[in-house]
Length: 187
Image (cartoon, rainbow, N blue to C red):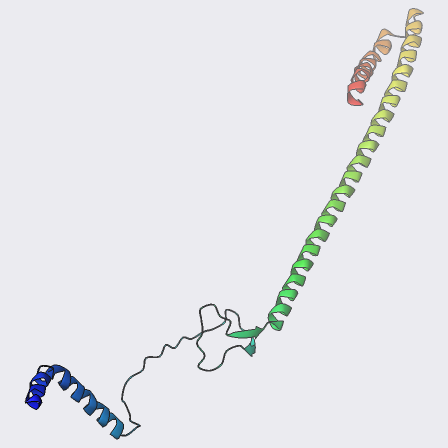
């Protein structure tokens, strides 16, 4: 009877025994089957095209084929000698333009200085001419006044007509008026 009881107790654990039998069968099938097999499927790969912002020759490639790349990682180094030379050439052109502009301003300033010197020289000449005219007018006025006094003496003796004496008065008045304006004109 103990065998029968043992069988009855074993039937109480039947789900466990079924799972154990299934696991042993799967293991036996796996162990006795072919070790290599083929599986059909599709693998998604992410291709990302990269390109530099400037055109240049590649100096070095810093990654290997199949290596994963992180965002911001340097992939290749470009030969910048052509870009550096171009930038230096553009700098030289800018300096030349700046020097040409400076030379144009210098020439403009020199032209203005020459013009100012010419204007100053012309003003000095005009001042000297005006002083000369003033001196001539003063000398002419002095001579006309002497001549007027002489003519008045001759008129007083009745040796000269009155019209000849009064003919000098408008010229004397004009010269005296001009003499009054000279201080303001030559100040």
